[in-house]
Each structure stands twice: as C-alpha cells, then as structure tokens.
Image (cartoon, rainbow, N blue to C red; front, side, top):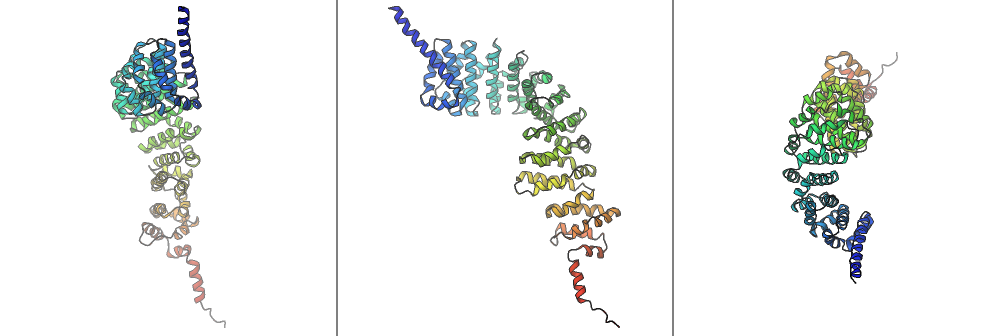
Length: 509
C-alpha cells in the first residue's frame, strides 16, 4: 500500500519536472511566447520556485528568465506576480545553479527599462547580487556582475544604488579572476557604472580599476579587449582629470594596436576611447599625435565603414581643432582623403556632418591648411552636400560653417574660382571677399584671375545693391581698369550692338 502512495508522489514530481523543463525549452522560441503567456504560465511557474526539488526550482527560474528576456510586458508580469522577492530570497539560500538562474531572471527584467530595473532594486536584489560577487563559483559571480551592469546602465540614480551597495571594489576583484567570461562581465559592469557621471567614474578609479583594466589591452581575447576599451573610454570622457588617469595607465601606444584588431567592436571601442581622450586639452591631443595616434586613426577610418567610422572621424576633428600644428599633423598623416571619402560616400547624414566638421577644424587655421583642403577638392564636395536637397539641417549647417571657416583662410585663389559660379550668394560673399583681400597684393594673381575667366564669373554674379556681396564685387572691380571690367560684364555685347546701331559710317568719297 505504501509503495502505491509513494508512486503517486513520484509521478507528481516527474510531472513537475517534465512541465518546467518543457516550458523552459518552449520559452527559448519566440513564436511560443504568446501561447505560453495566454496559458497563464507565470502563475504556474511561481510556486515551483519554492518546490522542494532543487532541479525544479532551477528550471522554473530559467523558464522565467527566458520569458522575461523576451519583452518588457513579460518582464512586467514577473514583477506583478511578485516573483522577484522569491528570487532574491533564493539568491542567499540556494545552490549555485539556482543563483545563476535567479540572477538571469533579475537581469532579464532589469534590461528593459529604468522602471523595471528600479523594481529589481526595490525587491532588495542589490545586496544579494553583491554577495554573489564573493561566491566561490565563477559562473555565479559572472551572472551577478551581468545583472548589476544591466541595472546600472539605465540611469545615474540606479548606478549610484549599485555603487552604494558596495559593488565596485568586488567587481574590480572579479576582473582579476582568471576566467575570461567573468573578466568581460566585470569590465562591462564597471563601464555601465562609470558612463553616467564623473563622480561614478571616480569610484572605479578609486577602487584601482583603471590601471588593472588597462593592463589587459594586449590580451589575446577580443571579447575582453572590447570591454576594456569601452570601460576606459567611459571613464576618460567626463573630464581632463579622468582622461589623464587613463593616459597615466599607459594605454598608449597599446590601444593603437587595438585599432588593427580582427574584431570590429574592439576597433570601434578603441577609436572611441581615443576620441574621449583627445577632446579635452591640446596636451592630451599632442600626446596622441606623439604616440603615432593620428596615422593609426587615419588607417582606421580608411578601412572602417558606416557608424564604425564615426569615433575616428571625430578624433581627427578634436585633435585638429586645438592648434595649427596639430591640424598640420593630421594633414601630413594623410587625414584629408578618408574624411573626404566619408563626406562623399557614407549614406548617413550624421557621418557626413561629422566629416564636414572635422574637415572644417583642419582647414580653419591658416592658408596652408585651407590650401590642403582646396587642392583635395574638398570645398566643392562641402558645397555639394550643403546644396543637396536631401541633406539634413545639421549637415547643411556643419558644411556651411566648414566652408566659411576654410574659405576665409584660403589664399590659393584657383581653388576658389569654381565656387564663384556654383555657390549660392551666402557662400559667394566669402569667396569674393577672399579675392578682394588677396588680389590687391599680387599682380600676377590679378592677371591670372582675368585669364582664367574668374573676373568674368564675378561680373556674372547677380548681387543686390547694398549687399555685402555687391560691396565685395565692387572692391574686386576697382583693381582693374574700367575697360576690362566692362569687357567681361554680361551687358558688354549689348553695349557694342547699341554702339553699332548708333554708328554712322563716313560716306565714301
């Protein structure tokens, strides 16, 4: 009789095992999610988290994690069914398999929105997750670091809550563990904390994180280097002091080698870190130049495509902006051709706009800089994107500013002549003004300007009386005898015809 009773319990247990394992498997496929939800799966899984069989608890947590990971609606359902407190309780009590599964559910809920991440915090999960960072099992530490990073990434308030729970020093310790996946997750979580404010980034510095993380720039694993470069960039971006901390960790020239990594994410994150350092001061930009950084970034932009180009493009602009010497370093390192290529060939307007901005920073310093752009046919290309009807307002603004700043420094007049005909009046006035400034001091240039057809193009400009453009045209005309100006004016043929009509030939004797 007792055997028959026990068999009932065994069959019930086996049914529970089959149920949770099947649900966990079904939850792996997106097409099954709606059916599972409509069948009331949440309410059925919740009591199984408290089952007296450990494997059932773990499978129930895994199924919940997969469901919550699918959408914010299902993650919200985990919260409303009051499942989080049970998971948090299990984190402190259960075996390593349940801890991993519970941390997975918390991460899956927290990832969707700040509100859901706050619900995880409100459930008391932070303390338990931080305790798990000290667990003997590396996979538990990894799952915990992952969940903490997903909580911290949303807002500075959530990141501060993670810091206040004591996570940062333990994440730095986890980074020093030999397991690669744990190193990656720890670096990722530290980056998610550091990105929000200088104060939060400083907590990573104070825990000794920067110097330890920077040591792994030369690691063979691309996944780790990706997170390392990201974390260093998130620290460096806030202010000069933090950028100097990153530089003092001897990231140069090692981070330049990451620009050649086989993994595109490593390359992009390395370029982003360089950009965040370059933007602050001339000294930091000079340090990058002296380390061979400009040539490395130029190579990176030349090879990269799409959004991956952006940090490299911006880096060159930031470096060139500080001084004419640094801008010249960009020119000498052949930085103009890849920026011009991005301006012409990248389909996204924000990439074209960044290229236009960087080109403007290079060319605005002086005649030599502007001539380098002019001889590379950059001015016409900037004008083309400015005039293109499909260009965004931001792109048009940046192209116009770049044109204005470069034209105003350009004394290489042959490069400006094509703009006399192609440019609209608001750009023409800067072009004609340059001719008005340069021609009085150069007789050969005045002669060449006539021979090339430049003076004729100036006469063909239809400028309003009293406008700046009209004034500049008059200044140019004053440098030539009236007969020459008349000869090239559009009305000259009509004047000749009128003279012909009024002319009466002398009668033959």
